[in-house]
Image 1: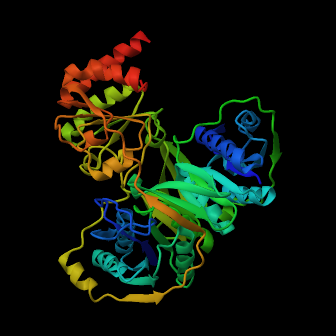
Image 2: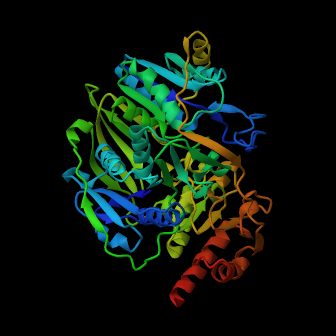
Image 3: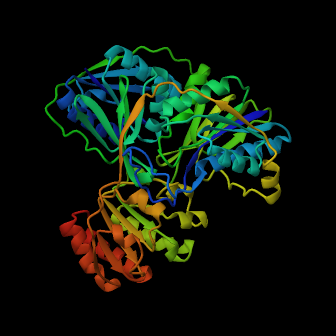
Length: 326
Length: 252
């Protein structure tokens, strides 16, 4: 039985999250068997043949002039058409903004279950079991599927992209679908990008977050400077967002974003349970806080007890010096 | 114009999760139940649209056991006109079951806007809004952070949060929308609103759910992080911090 992977593209480029999903598909195929087939919806081929290296043995491409932007109805139709053609045991999506919108639509059309935002997949007694954080990461639920195919969306940054192998050049097969954008009754007028080049919190390798202890929005300049030195994205606690110091999109934790970067630096954040839930799956956590009893130190790998106004600028300078040395 | 806001009762975000003896669900002992925080933004937006139009009706709908009526009353206290309770019992249903039950109920209503929170903060699935839209054949915009309704209320322009920006989507009503934090500032229920809510009708309907498409095998607490260490005090600790991040954790 095949494993089907939705290949997410943006601006005509295959996104890293699609390579992560392919990587997991290749690992699953080692147990479940079957070819790994990709399906992509795009205005034009985003270079799918290159995914042979990532383990795909065939790629199905649905093209439409309107597919330059995300077209939920058309994209869903493409995935459903691929499911009908390939009859996969498993369909993998990324739990990106697009995948979280698209996968439930496909599940409803197929009348099958979807395990969303998963952090682990296992095959037990021939059954696929998906692990997914719930309560923003305070607990982990393991779910099984009662029908087929099993639909799964994978949390970004958790699964390793497939290593480049000596895969052959896979066939890129056109997938014919009927799509009438007018009938969809929804269309993307434009995509407004935020701060240029800013990596989203959910996809950032490094995050520097600031909390209430920074005393005011103007002091986030210090956090921005450290983030710039580290190549990090800036995050914030709920208290700071609710106070209007930072936009809602910056909030980490329950009612904000759940993140899994390789390094998370929490500055002047005490560590409310909602915040800890959203960031405790980070690989390495650093806490800088003047209160040695702050709950954040319980989840931190490395802590510095001290005034953020002294520690952060010193850390920024040290990181800059490190960068200068190469 | 009729708007329906689908809401869910969830465990308070302050909750320390304990696993029930079945090994699959949340131990409800000592849990405070609240209105799902994202649903507050959905209710608020529906109320604002009704108020701006000076007419129309906002119906709140929830699926669950008898306990969800408290949450429906909270929504009525915020200003919703009436409530529908799709009454179930037994294990918490999975998203497709919920979507099918809600879609079946909504089919009989001529709602122009169907609101949801972007996700419930318990199972974090974020599946029911697009599923309901598909089942009803309606367009859907998820994770809505801003919305403008056309003057004749036949179309809306919604902005949805995506990685690194916003998609601006034009949608024709009837439509399903799911609300992101920041869409608005939800109001608190006034004393008058709380009093009025006691007299507002809750239409209770027993529903039989379709068989589940997913089954929960287990619920467990995540592996505890191994204890960390304090590398030092104040700015003097910076060289050691940089060293451990570079040499031990290898993250910079």
